[in-house]
Length: 201
Image (cartoon, rainbow, N blue to C red; front, side, top):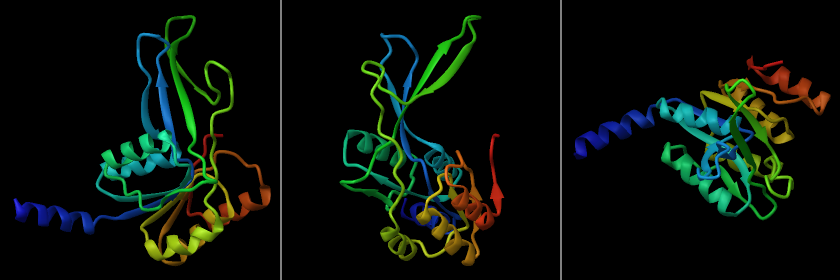
């Protein structure tokens, strides 16, 4: 048993690292039936990518600024289930734990379809949304993970761009998956810093 554990640890320690910054959210899955309880999973673009990489054998480190609440507890519990490292998931009083509802239903033709919802189903109040990691945490992040094979980001902020530049200088590949272009100046800077850009439209 001890020999197999040592070999597993050795394989894990030699696995490539991906550090990701962006949308790490709690996904709430609803299928439209009041008899079916909601299911919750770690999600968001960044959360999904790093969970998948961990499943494939990578050492993955999402960076997020969450608020201490039940949603954050559920999110972190699911990340840990997939052996995602949560050392860089910051729990802060001024943080936010994004919640996204995924509603699965049938269209008029009876075909399964899906939509995202960002308001509570009953009172239609806005659910918590993404908050960027503050610049003050960038140096701590660098000290925690000094090098990475890939740096992934899907939200533009000064902190994400600074980390993209830093990890690129250290030999990492920078993968940018933009969700929108709200700040053109920062968007152009993000493009200039990235090796791979993935977008849907």
